Amino acid sequence: MRLIQEVTAEYPIYLANSMNSLRLEGQKTAAIEIIQQFDWQVPDWVIIPGGNLGNIYAFYKGFKMCKDLGLVDSMPRLVCAQAANANPLYQAYLHGFDSFKPVKAKQTFASAIQIGDPVSIDRAIVALKATDGIVEEATEEELMDAAAQADRTGMFNCPHTGVALAALKKLRERQVIGPQDRTVVVSTAHGLKFAQSKVAYHSKEATHISCTFANPPTPVKENLGDVLDVIRKNQFI
Image (cartoon, rainbow, N blue to C red; front, top):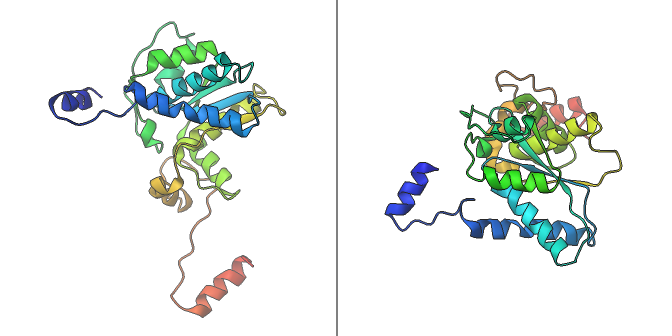
């Protein structure tokens, strides 16, 4: 971020990430759409992957605006989900937000949130405190497993959505989120943007994780007989 700021100070290049308040104004409309699609009923929880942390604040702004305008009479509790390999907000949350220390982010499949010193840390803490929010983390295995499980329903999730889904699973298992609570998980990208992570997981080539829910690809020769043999053997139809 320091380098980006230096570059945009020297050249007419537009800084469009969460340091730019206009970006947050655009992002907050997703919160309004959630309420609108629920017929102006507020969900109990909204779980959002967090890296630079502008998104958690943007959602807070959207929900708060609806409440201030009298469109709804409550706000959801926000959950910021971080990869365990890049979890500075989670570490601050464990200490009651009394202090914040940047971390050196480690490599994670959730590469877009591989951020150890988020620029919107202060705004994120404001949002979480105002909504009695929670910060949860997900290991590499947890986030990839969660994405793979969700993909079995017909979705194709990015690893960052896997972080949020893993947070949902963990909070349900601890009964923090109840079985009847209406919960929204924000999907931040399509899996095709991170296809290599999918290939590594399902081929069981991803290191240090067991790939429990892998659906390994089957190499097939380019002729009809071999293709039909594989279909019959695996009972695809």
